[in-house]
Amino acid sequence: MDKCYLCGNHFNESDVMKHDEHIIQQAIGGVLKSNNILCETCGEILGRAVDAPFSMMFDSICTRLDIKKDRGNNKGTAKGVVFSNRDAYGNDLSGVEVFWKDSKVTPVKPIHKYSPDNSKVVVYASAKQLKSYKERVRKEVDERYDDGCKPEIVVCDDLSGVITYPLELDDEAFKKGFAKIAIGFASRVGVDRDVLNLVLDVEQNKIKDNVSLLPFYPKGVFDDIVERDKKNIRHYPSHTLILFTAASRTNLLVCYVELFSTFQFYVILSDQYDGKPIYEGYQQRLDKRESYIFKPDRRYYKERGMILSSLGIDQQRIDNAYEKQKEFSNAKTAEEIEYKIIQDEYMKQKYYVDFDEEVKIAIDYASMKLIEPLDQLSLKNVTDTLSNARLFYRSDENDEEFFDVSSYRRCFFSGGECHDYVFYLKDFYETCEGRKKRKEYGHNKLYMLSGHMEIKNIKEKLEA
Image 1 (cartoon, rainbow, N blue to C red):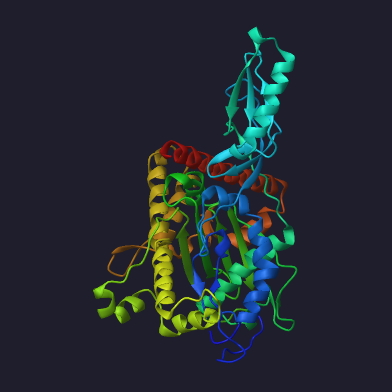
Image 2 (cartoon, rainbow, N blue to C red; image 1 turned 90 degrees about the vertical axis):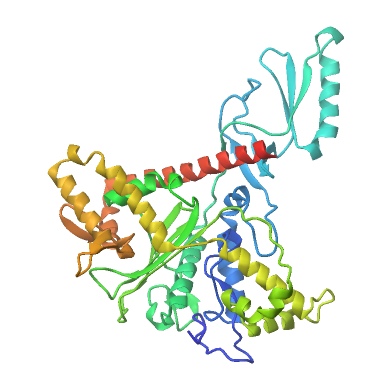
């Protein structure tokens, strides 16, 4: 691409400057970048209008996953509500609003409750709240009880039980956030803005207001197993992008966007695509990264060009980053800027995974699960299973087997027929059964992610 996908202006060295743009929002852990899809002005506009409200909806998830950001560690909080009935002290804390921070769950406002047998009074408070509130509880106990029967004051600065963290989804911001990701990925692959007629208004230079998202639901037998066992396969949770042309209608251009292995939608980008068939996939992991400090040694200075090239860093990027901050009072030297960029790129690449390899691992896993009960299935189900297998496991002219990734999330076999996911699901959701199943599936995906974060939280406490 040599022009901005939003305003359509060609990049130059004066008024239409290239902008380092995260395809998936950096605030939700996205690391894939492109510096030739948006100009600086449009990047800033979309950052305020789309990225900020979109990312804010996932803030509690990012906080609990401890997602790192280019500008430092995530030190935010996640607000939730206690869902379970009784805690370890026998107290009912249902409905208590809490904050999650640094792997601890504390009430928004300090509270205290007497145990059912009145042997204890439990003070639920954070360390910051504790001193003054505990003194208040002590005075209450002194006033209520005689010296011989005063309940023991117990402090709890980490609530247990089931905590729910509601997602407050803004429909318009949600849709535009997904659309922006899809447009950015398509532009990075080289699709021209004029083709993206269903998501971009090229006359008014904006993302359309009526973008429609088609929720994913696993219909193929392999997808059903992969989604059910996703957290047991590899790199859970993760972000995934797939840009493809529909198998039966190559003029339909679609981007599948999956965030946190949970929010899965098809964005229909165009019904006027007339280029070559496309299938481009990308996946990144979201695991907490290790700390890393780049320290140049004698080898670096000797092999600088080779090292920069291997990380995809050119001199112009270093110069631009230096120029942007050189007038500041805390400006860094060009060398310091260079070292910071190297460090960021090194850390970013630790998140990349091989998309084709990850799909193959998932499909192989599902295949093994299906082989065991194959003799117990009906003839129809056996036929569908074998047909779906042939979508992925193919043979060349020399009868050498190879894995073909290009059907993943694109099409599947059912009832002896091959279906495009986007067409099948559109009809499926027009039925009561389809809408019900999609709702149940969405709840199950959120429950899986929530369970993963709870286990992660427990492990971090044990390791502390």
